[in-house]
Amino acid sequence: MISVCMPTYNGEKYIREQIESILPQLSDIDELIISDDSSSDNTLGIVKSFNDCRIKIFQGHFHSPIFNLENALKNAKGDYIYTADQDDVWKPNKVSVVQKYLENYDCVVSDAVVVDLNRNVINDSFFKLRKSRPGKIWNLIHNSYLGCCMAFNKRILDIALPFPKDIPMHDIWIGAVADNFGKPVFIKDKLIEYRRHGNNASPAAEKSRYSLIDKIRFRMAIVMNIGKRKNECK
Image 1 (cartoon, one colour):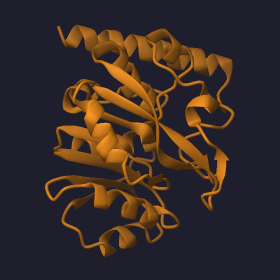
Image 2 (cartoon, one colour; image 1 turned 60 degrees about the vertical axis):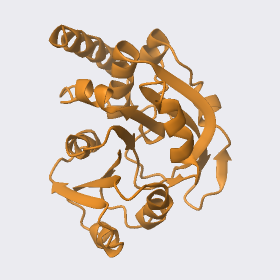
Image 3 (cartoon, rainbow, N blue to C red; image 1 turned 45 degrees about the vertical axis):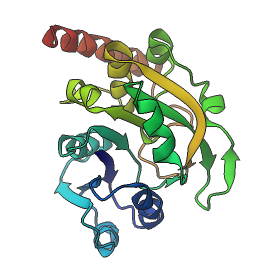
Image 4 (cartoon, rainbow, N blue to C red; image 1 turned 120 degrees about the vertical axis):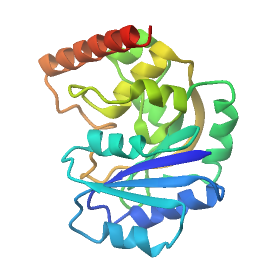
């Protein structure tokens, strides 16, 4: 069973296109978990208009994309979990390609084409733009994990939850869990159109908004929280 987990917030402009790209790839027993963070636009109206029993909606007041996603993950029942943004578009072969890798790996990170709000290509490879590659130390210093391009098994999910309160972003944390507790793989297949429109919840593919001190503090938090999880898993 597959659970696609999507945090939403005022996503009416793009969410229909994203859901339309996801649902045809899911079987009748799979699910699309929507966790909505108090949207004031027609996001939930659009989601409900699909009238699809595989879509499950959970609402809350999180004021954070990190803990909005955490709520979606807590409600996921699948053996395999895909994290998705509300404003991207999945390629038609995303699930079929990733599932083959999940037979042998705990976490899969695929490449993406970076596009603008109208889906015009900005960069033909997020991996090249970000210099993405595997490696525990590399990803602690220069994070390559991008949530909307990730899928992982329930073992990684169970270790990652609950999220520590001081992590900088959910994909960095899940990636660190995969690096330290599992077997991750980065694949060159470009399986989503990663849309950048100026109002994204994540700053990935853009210049970091954080100071050097912030970056050091975030990385120390990741290291300390991974150490805590290792003690808990003994």
